[in-house]
Image 1 (cartoon, rainbow, N blue to C red):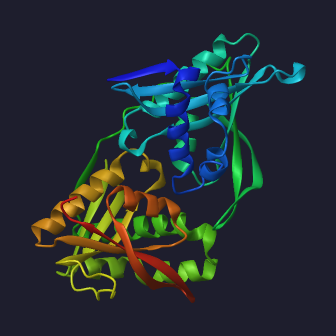
Image 2 (cartoon, rainbow, N blue to C red):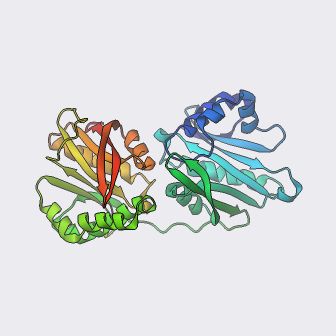
Image 3 (tube, rainbow, N blue to C red):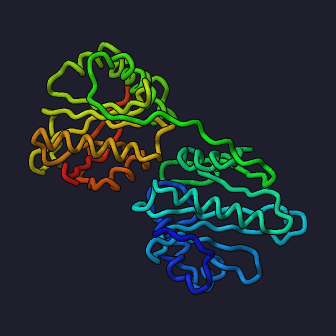
Length: 353
C-alpha cells in the first residue's frame, strides 16, 4: 500500500540510504555524487528532511512502511527570493517506478508550495537529455525557460541543465486525450518502409549528440534503408517484433540467430538481441519493459537460453536499462559507426529472467 507523508528527523537514516542509492545510479540525473553525500553527518540529512527553521521539507513515498521514493522542497529566506521554492532530489527506486509514484510526489510537493505563504513559483533543473523526467515535469505544468550549458562534468563529457518553473497561479493542465493502446506483434514485409523510418529516427535520436554527422548518416543509410529492412524481414535467421500505437510504429526489437559470438559470451544456447529501440515519447512508460519481456519469451520459444547484446559504453541510459533487466557485462567488442570505431560493452541475460 502506498502512502505519502512529510519526513521527520526520525526518517533521516532511511532518507539518507534512499538518496545515496539515487546518487549511485548510472546516468547524470543528480549533480551530487554518492561519495560527497555519504561524507555528510546524519544531522545534515535530518535538517534536509525536515528543516527546523522552515527552510525546507522532504516528502516520502512509503510502500508497506518502507521508504521507496522522495522529493525535497527548498524555501528561500532572502527577502527578494522568498516568492520561489526549489524542487530537488526526486527519486523512486527502480522496482517501484512506472507506478505513478513520482507524479504523486510532485503533486504533493506542489500542494506544499501552494500552502507556503508568498510562494509564487516552484523551480527545478533537469539534466539535458533526461527526456522522461522532463516529460513528467511538463505534464504537470512546468515550463522550460532556459538552459545552463556545461552545467555538470560527467565521465562522457559536459552536460547542460534545463531550467524549468511552475507558476502556482497556472490553471491545472488539461486532461490528456486518450491514447490508443500500444500492442506488440511480429513484423511483416509490409512494415519495411515504416520500420526503416523508425530505425533511422531512433538511431539518430540516440546517437546524434555524440557522433559526427557524416559517420551517423553513413551508418543509417547503409543499415536502415527500406530495401535493407525488406531483406531482413525476409531472412529466416532474423525475427523482428514491433510496438504499434494506432498505426504508428513506436519501438522494435530484433533477434539474430547465427551471429558470430564474441569470445566473452560463453553461456549456453545464446542468441543475439541485435537491435532494441523505443521512440522518445514512449520512454519511461513501461513499453521497453514489455518489449523486452516479449522478445525474451520469443527467444525462449525458439530454444535460446540466453540473450547477448552489445551497447555503446557511452550510452548510460541503455546500460542502466539492460542492467535493470538482469543483463551483466561480460566483455567488450567494437562497433563501427561510419569511419568511427567505437567500444561496446557485451552484455548477457537469461531468457527466463
